[in-house]
Length: 355
Ligand SMILES: *Cc1c(COP(=O)(O)O)cnc(C)c1O
Image (cartoon, rainbow, N blue to C red):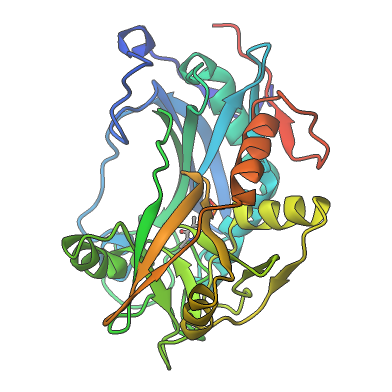
């Protein structure tokens, strides 16, 4: 174990009180969290402490000016019960991409990965054993300097918390193609996992839900015709045998599931193109019977199948006849849980701490 992370353990773990067959979504947290402070230009005092409240000054800059970014990833167990992380260095890189855009300091990749490993090692009993379940990890950074005024903060906190998550039942979802509100514009913050992006998406998502849809399908900010992505997922279409996903043009989140799915599809000899794609092209493909499948990709759900896309005056129906995505999802899950050989070199093992 890395010597420079100090550890203060709880007296008694709460894990025994958790029913792994019935995990409340997003409200259960493990015993500990990892914290690190940024001051005087460097990260100091990395520590694992009991999960609890953090005193916050009312002028903490994140609350006013929104310097707040996050990551999302999962820890799994392999067949022998050994904890594993899926591509954690990719999350470290993306956190720093977000940090750069938001004028926040970078977190050294090994601090990020060591903090994760140490926390998962200590909390390995919280990784749900059931197929499809995992320990969700939420690394995040925010400006905690008390200051009124517009500039980059000089004090930040980097925290990792962990929350067990049950299997996600992925029914086919319905998307609402949004032509009034936008998520991200060229030159904006769309490719940062910045808290404010999600704040701006809440109301449009609620309106879409009120119309009977599950999520918003975001279109470009200027012409409202180029497809960007969905809620917290990237999107893939299969048209006439070929997979297409919107290119990373600065307004689309660099999904790690997206990158992994592209690699897997290519390894299966499918052609995958990253390019601009319009909602009209999807409409036409559906009419001609060439829209063979459509799915969203993200850490939370893996692959979510899309059933239909609602537009102002019509509905685009997606076929479900040859779902290659289901096969990709099964393969991805089998790699993450050590049931299939890690042939892409994606998994990082974590040593279990003897508690
Ligand atoms: C997190 C996120 C994704 C998916 O990223 P993964 O690394 O695959 O989990 C896609 N779009 C948005 C907007 C996101 O916030």
